[in-house]
Amino acid sequence: MTGRILLIEDDETFRSFVQTILEDEGYEVVLACDGREGARRLAKESFDLVISDLKMPGKGGLELFRETRQDPSPPQFIFLTAYGTVDEAVAAMKEGAVDFLTKPLVAPEALLTLVTRVIESQWRTRELLSLKESESAGLPPEELVFAGQAMAKVRQLVLDVAGTTANVLIYGESGTGKELIARIIHLLSQRSKAGFVPLNCAAIPENLLESELFGHEKGAFTGAIQARQGKFELARGGTIFLDEIGEMPLALQAKLLRVLQERVFERVGGSKEIRAEVRVIAATNRNLQVEVAERRFREDLYYRLNVFPLHLPPLRERVDAIPLLVDYFLDRFGRQIGKKLKGVEAEALTALKGYAWPGNVRELQNAMERAVILAQGMVRCANLPEAILNRSVPESRDSREALKDVERELIVKALERQRGNRRLAAEELGISKRALQYKLKEYGLLDD
Image (cartoon, rainbow, N blue to C red; front, side, top):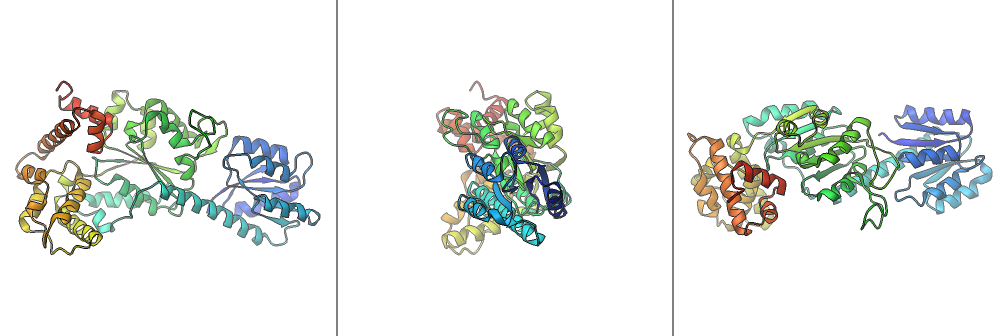
């Protein structure tokens, strides 16, 4: 358990004593010799907890505590007090202080128990906040995630990197399970007790993305009626997952680079430095080396993120995994809607194995959910989407070319359905508008 604590105490001997107790337990302790210095620290930095003497020359702990109550996310306070000021400490608790301990500190264990309770409570709160913003329905079994021979190397790399603090950059086409792999790395890491906070960089409008990442102060921009924590604050102690990192605007890339280098950031409209005690896992379906060469992605940020690259193979390279995935989705969706099916007929399974799967596992999941709804007794070819039946390709055919044909046709059909509206077409396809623009250029569709 780690945490950042501001210790404010004017008695040097007692200050050193408490510092030793806390640091021996692994806490990071920042010292202040009086209330004024404590106020300066709190104005510039963020802390999980403040432990302060109640009575000090100049500015006392109680005065400082009351000043901080005006902050959008005020720190928790534990007071150290002499017997003569216990009444004031009790009054502070009624105003929101966590607790108080009397001096001299006879039992250091009492302080450690109290500190641990506060820090653990804050971690749980952050985790709950991050879970509320996540639509994850849980992880499938490990043997399913890493099904197929092509995933054996990925599994070993995940096990190798999970226990480290290294930044990870996950490459893979849309639908290959990049967020799933990021969650597994988090759960296998020493940060697993803290939150996993995902953010899709392509899903947030450019003018709001900085606020989503770093939070904002009240009045920072039109509509900012109250202060708000960003994803980096919610993920403190845990992992932040930045999906579609290649879509991040260049100006914001520079700010992210600073976070990775200096481990600090400020909220939009704020000046207080907040420590970024998080692990960063990023993901992209783009070739970032090409993006760097074409000056759409910062080279220095690329090298900061690309410490440990992980490449996820597309589903067309994991054909041996399709029967396992099909059985899993058949059981999952069958239980969800209360339908018991016998299985998938051989001809339908052959069609599923022969399809190029431009949407990868996500597309297979959607196809199986539809098939379970339509099937009676057993999933048959008639229950599968027409695209799968029409575009299943013989093994002798070049799968890359087949994929391009399928992808081009999907884009054309989506644009037709949306009457040429690229934003709506991108939403239907589950990609960003910038990604769609890139594909239109690649397939020579910009003039069509």
